[in-house]
Length: 168
Image (cartoon, one colour):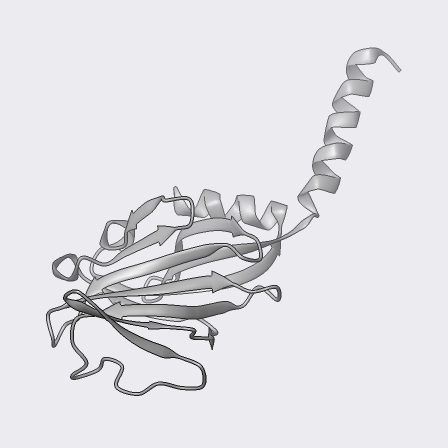
């Protein structure tokens, strides 16, 4: 066998085995269209946050999440400007409430969330910020619609496929 064939065959074998490596992916899916709009590989202790304008109170809300060692989404902190309709009014366990300037902050939260369903609309300034600082303006992903944020285990090849579906 000549060198060119050995190189090609080796590359195919390496690609095949690499494609079977499992990974965990933070996915955002447009529920009504049943299509992925964002996918990002995550690791334990990765963090992200969401921000939006509350539709009733018309005040900013920011929620902070981490990925635990079992790849579950955990809400660990939230900030908001008022505690009226639809916003936190009670604390659980070791949670602490602080007043900081013009907003309230709840810390020491540990609320496992199987997924986040977010109704996004341009007027509510919905964003998701990854731990690396990458800012996603959520309505720009699929318009004004219902999005689901969740973690999914898949092979690297499946991840490549999902990423390809986003751009088609």
